[in-house]
Length: 338
Image (tube, rainbow, N blue to C red):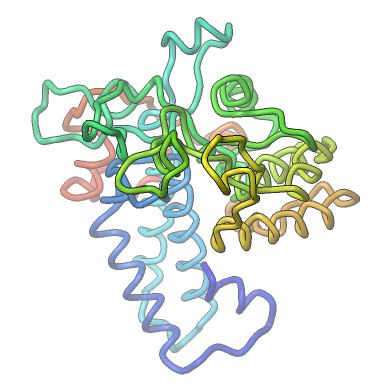
């Protein structure tokens, strides 16, 4: 995606870039769509974030190689196959990451919501997976705990809009906002801030001592920026998130000496500052520069005449996208089914 973006902007690329992108596409095709780790490097499976990035990487990579002309190692038929596979995985994002009828949905009076990550199939055809499976919650005092995937929410889903795969006005995204604001959002002195996910244990211990394998999840500036980015995409003000970033991380009161001070973990603050600047620039634009033009027409609701048959949610059948991507591409993935 970086190579495609740089090429779109007219920047020269180093020698070997075409081969590198070709090899990267081959890796995604052979190993996707699910990943061994999520964006936080904790759990395997499929999240709206990792799936969305993978789909857009296929689309961007195929387009990049097509524009390479005679130097492209990708044939026209191979390029068409990569795009068909991207569409195939894109149409299954909800089957892997969208829960309906859960306790959280009842709590917030919504029909469904995007989850943090769907459980990966484990080889047992009768085992629940995706939003009906169980995922480990790491960094807990007694070791990992297993939670229903449908009850764990995070800020992965806004990337579907940020990447152009779903509209920011998509009702499923808006319903998930309702759940997320209630479960992991927190009002701070200057606005709204967010945790990585509910029951997160990555942070200092409850007594203020340093993280040593377990602790209490903290508010992340990065996530306030991502939440504001989504508001900008929907054409709404980002003031709550932008002002929260000004004072982030938020100091938390503890009797332990020093815990009243602001702590600035470098990666969190650098990413948060980046989002603060982006959101400030978007106040008058309502547009996300990271949305790829070549992905904008791939949202199922936008693609008139290309309807997909939904998967049986939560079961690893012989027609699910994981199996399909590895052994049955000739019959399904070559068709543009969205």
